[in-house]
Amino acid sequence: MDYVFPKNFWWGSASSAPQTEGESLRYGKSPTVWDHWFDAQPERFHQGVGPADTSTFYQNWKADIALLKQLNHNSFRTSISWARLIPDGTGEVNPEAVAFYNQVIDELLAQGITPFINLFHFDMPMVMQEKGGWESREVVDAYEHYARTCFSLFGDRVKTWFTFNEPVVPVEGGYLYDFHYPNVVDFRRAASVAYHTVLAHARAVKAWRDSGRDGEIGIILNLTPSYPRSQHPADVKAAHIADLFFNRSFLDPVLRGSYPEDLVALLREYDMLPACQPEDAACIRDGVADLLGVNYYQPRRIKCRDDAVNPASPFMPEWFFSAYEMPGRKMNPYRGWEIYERGIYDILTNLRENYGNPRCYISENGMGVENEQRFEKDGKIDDQYRIEFVREHLKWLHKGISEGSNCLGYHMWTFIDNWSWCNAYKNRYGFVSLDLDTQKRTVKRSGEWFSQTAERNGFD
Ligand code: BGP
Figure 1 (spheres, rainbow, N blue to C red):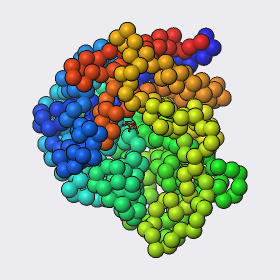
Figure 2 (figure 1 turned 135 degrees about the vertical axis):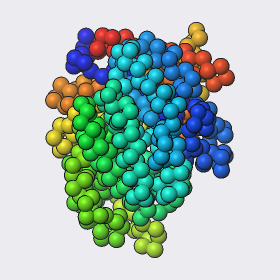
Figure 3 (figure 1 turned 90 degrees about the vertical axis):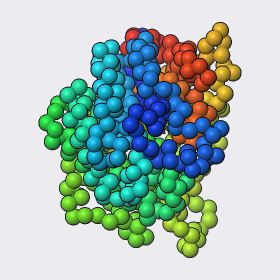
Figure 4 (figure 1 turned 120 degrees about the vertical axis):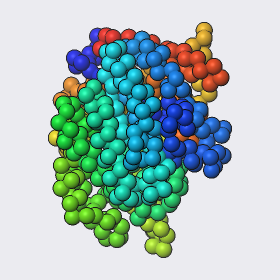
C-alpha cells in the first residue's frame, strides 16, 4: 500500500446531538436556542425544516451504531445535549436522558467503537440563553456544573472528552454576522462571548482533572489557514490579523494557556478587551487541552483592504483585511467552498512547529453536496467526488505524519446525512444517505471506500 497509517489510527466520523437526535422537545428535553429561533423565524431555515426533523438517532441509535460497525469505524464522535440532560440548565438531571446516553455509550463500546463525547455543539439551552448565554459568568458556572455531571455519570466509560465544537462559530454566527441566534451584530459582545467560552473550556478541563478519572479532555476547533494574496507586507499583515481573530483567539489559549500578545494589544487599542476577573489568567493557563480536534473545510484567502475604514462604522474584524478570491482556486462545485487539500498539512505543520506538536486528530473534514440524489446509480449514491476528496486530504495528512506530526486520526463529517442548522438538508455530507420520507439509510460508495480503507489502515 502506498499510504499506510500508524497503528491504532482513529478512523471514524463525527456528528452532534442537535443535528441527529430528533425528539427535540420530547423525553424531558427543554428547548435550545435552535428550537426557539425556529419557532420565531422558520423562514430563516432552508425549506422551513427545523431542529425537530433530524435523522432520529434518538430512536435509531442501535441500528445506526450497527452501521458504524459495518463501516469499520473504530471511533465515533457525538455530543451530549445539555438541554436534554439538565433541562433547566442547572438543576435536576433528566433520567430519560441518562438512560439514552448510557445505552448509546454502552452499545458503542460493545461494538468496539470508542466514543468521543463532546459537551457543546452550538446548542445553548434556551433557559441559559435567557440568562445571557456566553456573555454571562453565571452560564459559565452552570456549564461547569453540567460538565461535572457528565463526567460523573459517564466518565467511567467515556475516556475521550471535548469541551466544545468550533466555539468561534457561535461568536461569528450569533454576535457578528447574523447566522445564529441571538442575531446580534456587536464586536464588544462577541469578544465577551469568545472569552467566556475559553473560560468555560478551562473550567471543564479542571473539572475533568478533578474527577481523577483516567482519560483525556480536549477541544475541537475549526482552523482556517489564512493565506495572504501576496508577500507584500500589507497583505501579510492582513492575513496575520485574520488568523488572530479566527484561529488564534482560541488556539493560543487552549494550547499555550494565554492569548497572543498582538491580539490583546490590538483589542486594547480599540478598547474592545472583554472584562476579566483576576483569577481568570491562572484558570486559562491551567486549561491547556490534552488533545486538539481540528475541523478543516477550507482556508481563508486574505488581502489588505483597498479602501480606508470609516472610523464611524461599527468595529469589525474586517476593518483590518478583506477576503480575496484567488484565481484558479479549486472549488467544490456542489457547495461553493474552496477545496485546498494541502491546508490540512499546513495546519499540522503549524501545530508541530509553533505549538509543541500537540496530540491532535482531524475531527471533521467533508464535502457538502446539494441535490446529491442526482448521482444515484443502481440504488446508491455514486459519490466518486467524495472519495477523491477524502483520498487527497488523507495524502497530505499522511505527509504531515511522516514528517513527525502527532496526528492520531481522521474523522469525516459525517456519518449519515444530517440536519445542519440554517441549511437543514441542503448540503449532504454523509457516508450514508438518508431518505427524508422513509428515514431509510443507504451506504454511499464513499462509505464502502472508507470502510475498506479503515480495515486496511491505508490505501493504494
Ligand atoms: C461544521 C459544523 C457541523 C456541520 C458542518 C457542515 O462547521 O461543526 O455541525 O454543520 O460544518 O456545515 P453546512 O451544513 O453548513 O455545510
